[in-house]
Amino acid sequence: MGKMLMKGNEAIGEGAVRAGCRYFFGYPITPQSELPHYLAKRMPEVGGLYLQAESEVASINMVFGAAGAGARVMTSSSGPGISLMQEGISYLAGAELPCVIVNMVRGGPGLGNIAPAQSDYFQATRGGGHGDYHLIVLAPASVQEIVDLMQDSFDLADKYRNPVMLMGDGVLGQMMEPVDLGEEKILSIPEKSWAATGRMKREKKNLINSLYIVPENCEVHNIKLGEKYKLIASGEQRWEEYRTEGAELIMVAYGTAARVCKAVADLCKAEGMPVGLIRPITLWPFPGRRISELAETAKSFLSVEMSMGQMVDDVRLSVNGKKPVHFYGRVGGMIPAARDVFNEVQFILSGGAR
Amino acid sequence: MIFVVGAMLNLKRITILTGNLGSGKTEVAINLALSLMRMGKRTALADLDVINPYFRMRLVKKILENSGLEVVAQGGDLAFADLPSLSPAVKGVIENSEVNGVFDVGGDDVGARVLGIYRDSLFKTQFQMLFVINTCRPFTRSPEGIIKYINSIQTASGIMAGGLVSNANLGMETGLDTILEGFEIVSGVAGILKLPVVFTVVEDHLEKEAGKALGGEAEILPIHRFMSSPWQSD
Image 1: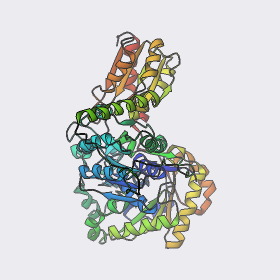
Image 2: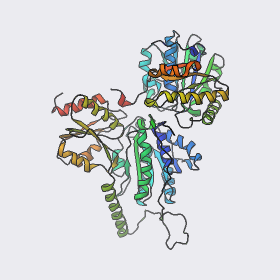
Image 3: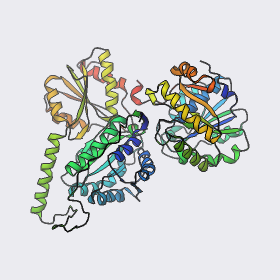
Image 4: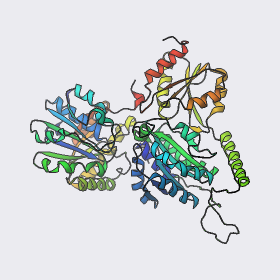
């Protein structure tokens, strides 16, 4: 099959179908509505189920049910809808249920607007809901990468029995790029011996639960989860590097902001300025190990975000005071312009002279 | 550059562009309107897209107006709103026989539903509804998929399609083969539905090659892209 021109939101849908997802529960919200729109058409073609729930609270609890029964299941929303889902997400993490949650981030806080933003970084990477837990958070930067990461999202969710969040924004969701969907693979979805699919003469009941009334037991559960997060944090850090070799200044940016920064790195190259980019693909676990290594050779870092400065905290933790970490952000639905970021880079490299 | 496209001389006063989501209606509408204007016709370009708040015409309104087009689109703060609102001036374009209109309608049957508002006044004047097809998009890669879409849009709008527009493209990766393969599929659909392929869209840098390859078979509308990704603008 030749290449296809797809919107990011459609690519999420198609990627999910190809990863074996057959259940989608969601509620429309701009800028991700093309995704439910796509799956409403596509799911019946593959014998799957698309269901528009009455709210985001309902959607996430439907996801809980389907995941508990062992299905590959997904929901999607944007900012306000994801906030509504937080209780359910915490329950999913507590009950160790694999699922994929898509957040196409929009301008906030509150109702904000429908324009692209990255201001849900804290919510995604720090937990978002109550209790000690982490989501695995993936941040694609192109429509092709969305398709590729959907498969990984479902695989990671199953491997660690943990909810995975795919974070994008309206630009990634709406823009169209050519994608190569490749041949449909024969899927190897691991058997879920823990799933609530009926007793089947097993000795022990499979219970899907996040309730631990006895504090000692709840502590044991939390420690077990903590061990799991440690394992994920050490084994699943992903990133892309661009022109980092010999770079004195390294930009750190993900998603749409990283696309802008790639253009900035090219501008810098043309001007003979040693500037590179590290693009986190996993936001949690954050690729801190590599940034820490780069802090040995680079002279400074610049976190470029569509927020007032959230990921920059993780960059600072990774650099650990070895080098200065700067920040450049646009907010409220605005996207950093390559020329403005370039000027900021020049400003830093010249030691603060405009 | 002045394009004089044969097919355009035969276009009725109002051209309504429909199609599935992301079929390229906005780019086609902008370029068609500019071509009509360059032929010396007073032309208004109307944004009737109420379903997609991203990458739509109102974002390049200023640029288009500066080039001499009349742009009818929701302006001011509402340009950024996720509201299904339309400019009241659309009706004016339909009723003013002095002006040619190019209407950019939202994608799919949900987008085409707005045409219901204008149906009665449209039937009192000269118009045609064209269906824009990009055979590289999901759901419209085969004649069956395309025909299903045309039917759903005809049902939602209450208007029959009067012709097809072949707009096969892979964005930046479009090659001559993309255009030719698409044209063949669209021609097949045209044969089944007994509708004309009114024009074939070709990015301006491929115009000569495509013209040669398609021979006299097809009318070509050369286009220049207006919708770009944020990192493509400086």
